[in-house]
Image (cartoon, rainbow, N blue to C red; front, side, top):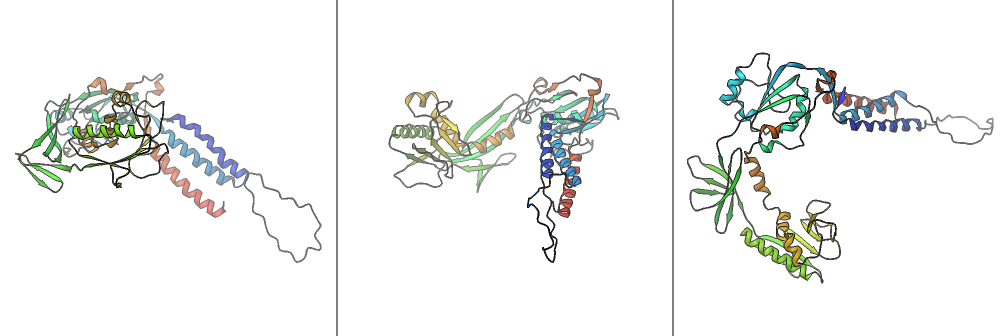
Length: 423
């Protein structure tokens, strides 16, 4: 047995905990009823504790449970003999029905297994319809699981999309060859629309294997609006979400001595309003407070960390690299320095304020989904680790699920025994 994360094995020192508990456990005193104490001899009254191994079976069971929890954290794998001659083929589900891929897979030998590039590596079926399968595989996460395949050589047919790489480059003892199916056509796709005073602004993307571009266009005609959606009237009608851009509300609390900082922040929001083409209203402390503000700014010497909503609080930090730094909890940010003409311009205060407002989260999500940029084979290739010994050239099967089943069963047995023995 080998482990994917052997450093967790240090947690086996936790086996000392149930051992110490059992060694210091005290036996319950027995009550003996007697008729008279006249015949009892006087003795030294001394309370003694039982320091001995009590309920050894229950102790071993609890220690075994802790050991299994540690092994589960360490990622147990069982070493089996691999097949150096056999080649395994894996195909991404979204391209499994393409004619070029199907013809290649149909021509393979019968002893060459073909799987889908998904969790669990289900078998590929030549007569199945995979057109509706839009799940984006995490390529490098799946590479780590390819060690469970019996073949030493693996060929992967994939789109190699950039959005499919979400972790560090993994190590593997398998020889993996990536066949990248290049996307030659450019995909134009409407994503989102904003209802502005000047009209309806449509956001579209134009993406291919090399670049992704975002376009904004104000529509004059060719659309219908229904509640919170926009329907484009074209040869192939499409519907996209429609967002109404409300006025941004800012609460500004300025203590005496922070008037200069307040003016710089007001000027920054004025510049952002012009850039965003969106109204921004600032409520000062002597005006009615808007409890539903998009951002609250606290320019005081006294800290304020216990309020709801999104807050920018002044808290000086000479070691901070930016004017605005993230706080210890979500939606809390710190203004790390007093403001002056130099740091306001050099450190781009308006851009940092725009970043914490996070106005484009919805747009980022839909753009990431439409991104069709691809990696080449060299960028996608994991780190190959040559086995030092022949014994290490093996297939590693993940047995975490079996360990979990055993652990669950033993925990049930331990609870039953503990209740029976009242431990």
